[in-house]
Image 1 (cartoon, one colour):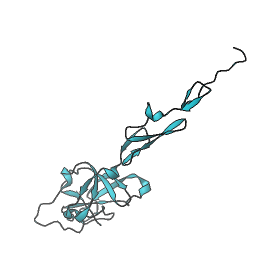
Image 2 (cartoon, one colour):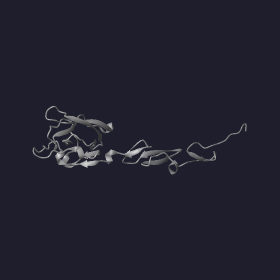
Image 3 (cartoon, one colour):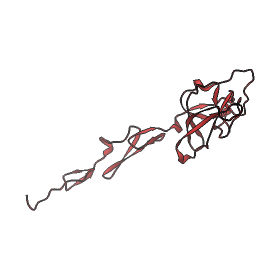
Image 4 (cartoon, helix red, strand yellow):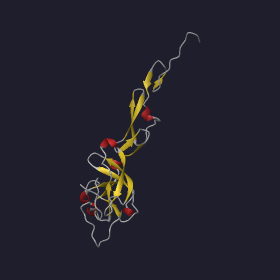
Amino acid sequence: MHGSHVCTCKPGYTGDGRNCTDVDECKGNHFCHKNAKCTNTIGSHVCECQPGYTGNRQNCTADPCYNYQNLSDANRKESYATPKYGQSLCDNLLPEGWHRFVGAAGTKMPVRRVPAFSCGTDWSGWLDGAQPKVEDGEVRRKVCFSDRSTGCKHSTYIFVKNCGPYFIYKLYPFTVCPSRYCVTD
């Protein structure tokens, strides 16, 4: 009808158009991930990944800084000399995934060449590049495995993340034996 009007509530509100109240989107269908916390705001809502999860509100995945396996073998340390007549160790059975070095093993991978016949193996693995900063997030790094003279007999790529007080490494089983990831303090 000419000269009349219709009142409606804005999105995020409910009512007859004259009296509108905020809708609690967190009580109904919302687009927050199951690992996110929904917080109602006036006229809308906010999703935040729960502690221990990271993502973009619609997809919150476990933060690897809270979801890793510990490796603590003292014979992983770069200062451990591989016994001459002992069996050299290999990371061919290492489970793929995020790992943190702790205890007698040390705390992080070395970023300089480790001589062959260290770390309980023949071909010692070390990072060919710097450890990342916290703000770098997950970074891809090359791991070299030392031979007797040239430096890098063979290599692979892993991911590294600085979790603040410690580093974690996404390691993969290495099938060229005997090769092993080494650790330092």
